[in-house]
Length: 118
Image 1 (cartoon, rainbow, N blue to C red):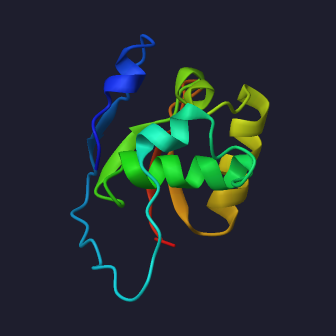
Image 2 (image 1 turned 90 degrees about the vertical axis):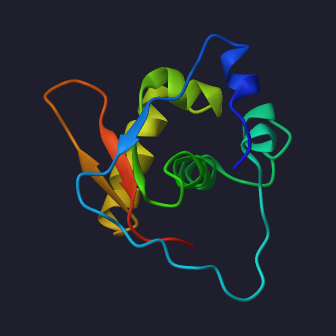
């Protein structure tokens, strides 16, 4: 996983914490394509990856493939050019699809963990 330097330059440092239950990260087998956090936050892939895909990839990278929870704040969504409303909508869709789990605390931003890797 790359550094978060480009996000820190914009005053944003992603907040993560270890998951409450240990997770065994499956090894990636076969062919796959990698997208770095720097590429994802730069905007160059916005026409290739729709908002929901960018959100999932962002969560997958920051959660270190499901081993950490990510505090999905509005600032975090803005880092990948997703509005607050789209963030909420796509998080619900990803949760309903069973690829993420969310831990909510009232009206605070949810803590999100990737539970199914693409």
